[in-house]
Amino acid sequence: MAKFMAGPSNTTEMLIQYRREVDDLKQRIKNRRIQTAGLYGTSILLVTAVSSWVFVSNFFWINSKAPGEVHFSFFMISAVLAGATALQVAAEFHEEHSIWKDRKTSVRALRLDLELAEERRVLEARNSTPETLNRQASYKERLPGEVARLRKESRHYRRIHLFTQWLVFTSSASITAVTAWYDPPQPGKGVLIALGFIVTVATGVTGYFKPRERAFNLQQTADSIEQHSTALDLGISPYTHDEATNLGNFAATVEGLRADQRMREQQLDQPFQGQQEVI
Image 1 (cartoon, rainbow, N blue to C red):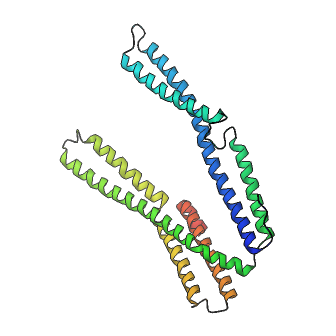
Image 2: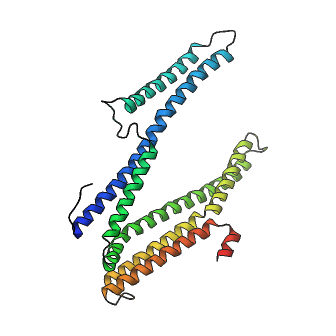
Image 3: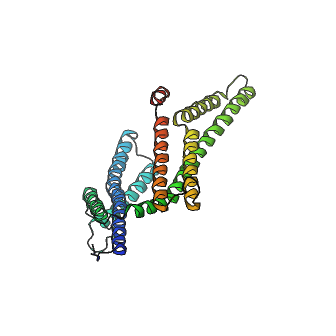
């Protein structure tokens, strides 16, 4: 890692470099897990396909020859798996033409490098910690991303809630329609069973995960943070003091809102009796 001269701008550049190193290692760990899973997974699937080919040929056609279509199907599956295995083995062990960045490197070694990189980043940040006022100003500048994340999660849970509700509505109406159409219920009995199952599952998911309540809480928190951020920018109540006092009050208020949001999420994860005890 390159060394920089002392100074705010150089310190910022160094912290950015550490952050990039950490993000790069996280992505490399993900890629390496996929590579390892593919390398060993295709080999296992190849052995399983060949074993199944032999088993099926000798178990189902003991006294006769298996049809050509069966042999062709197993041959194509085995050929594809063998080709994929050969390509991955070449990428892992070939010295000159490997396209894998971390070949012959274990995920454990990469995770150790990640821990060391994060430790270096923490130590560097600790050695060059800016003043409280600067940290509070930086905290305010990061909040738009937090607000966007809260709104995104709120829309996600709102879509889940709407989907499950429409599923319950349409399935319930379909049960009535199918019952009226088929009298006696055959051959609509299977349709009625499926629709009843869908209604039960959708109702259970809505009641257990509470997507509507989660969406409301997330949206409420995002709106409150945005309201305080706007009040701080405009210098209106309750942020009518000097800059240092306003930033301190703003940071404390936002952290309180985020703590309340986490508390509401924990309450939603508890059973109904547990929620009453928490409250």
